[in-house]
Amino acid sequence: MNSDILAMVCDPITHDPLEVETILDSRGLKQESLTNRKTGKRFPIRDGIPIFIEDEVISGPNKKYQSMYDRLATLSDFSTSAYSHWKGINVEARLREYLDELEVKEGDRVLEVSVGTGRNLQFLPRTAQYFGLDISWGMLKQCQLNMRKWNLDISLFMGNAECLPFKKESFDVVFHFGGINFFNDRAAAIREMIRVAKPGTKFVIGDENEELAQRYENLPVMDGWYGNRAQAITAPVDLLPPEMQEVRVKDISGGDLYCLSFRKPC
Ligand SMILES: C[S@@+](CC[C@H](N)C(=O)[O-])C[C@H]1O[C@@H](n2cnc3c(N)ncnc32)[C@H](O)[C@@H]1O
Image (tube, rainbow, N blue to C red; front, top):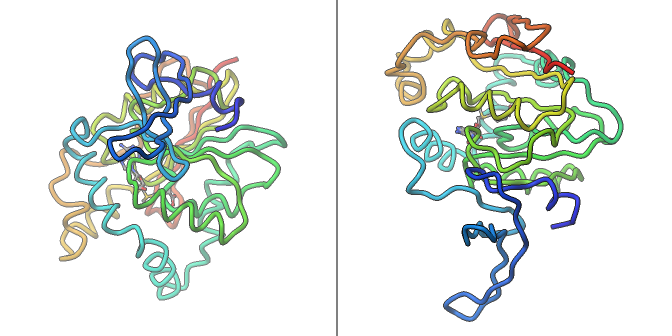
């Protein structure tokens, strides 16, 4: 991990700084980790990805969707392209409906919370520095493969959107697409995105609309994703702190998805 990135990461709970540490595991193999010197807590680094969550602290819907995405990871891109092909959807045009809202400038640090397989990165300027976090190890490994295939560079982190392992005001652009409807605590995730963003950052957050969820919930394969919703889906405008500016919600993807954008005051 380079020193610039090390300077940005922190303990996701205490926000203490972290140090790179190399220890020998029980089999005598070298194991790199990020260590909180104050508490002694170690966050292992596996295949170059720091792991900021422990299985036992992931619960509720987060646990359910983490397992579902882990199972789906290798099929995710194929099933999305097959569905788009069948429906005659131009994927790039669909993604640009929200990606074009982002204000990515040369040299910016851009964080995608819930990066999935990294498909959004293909359509963003190459002159910025990208960071992706996800709760699913399977999706992160798929993202690593895609980045190699597409010759793109990203720093990946395994973590929960509700407690981000980054210091405050680390990023110029922060966005999230496709997972927030079923997070355990959507308000905490939004607070965290705002905390790690620099003043003046424009945010984009989007996910499925209630109408789409209702269409899908009775389909046999999809009921596991959309069935038993605790409440009707709405864009989480009510969860934004009152000081956020330029709050806007638009329907995209023919009304199937919402795209909420807003700006952190300077
Ligand atoms: C539909 S995919 C979207 C991926 C990507 N943003 C995109 O637009 O292609 C939703 C992603 O949210 C992730 N996710 C679900 N719950 C999460 C949580 N609590 N914290 C971080 N990521 C989460 C899943 O693992 C999955 O990769």
